[in-house]
Length: 135
Image 1 (cartoon, rainbow, N blue to C red):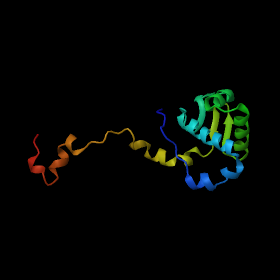
Image 2: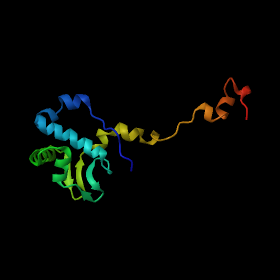
Image 3: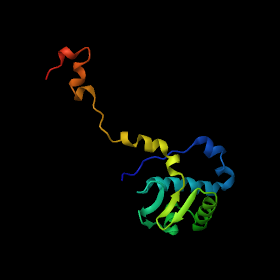
């Protein structure tokens, strides 16, 4: 699966939502880093090395350049507030699909080569210059 190059963040919910009072500023930074990490992993919304190998917390903390204690406190609070779940497959962002719905909606259209009229003479035949199309 190709990795994504961006994730979606809701402005109003990020600035005025419960994330503001549920987490400290440092924990909010970790939350956003976890969203980014989940966007970079192979399984959408799951922080793991592959479908059945979770990253150790020490590895995640090192990758995010944060103290392990800060990662642990953020994960604990996010699990209490149902933002995260963790199991043997990794750390799951709860409601990942709703966070990233626009990305998923547009996914079928990415990577398709768009054919322009110059690539397909038949597109000109029906237009007003169809009579000058050479084959």
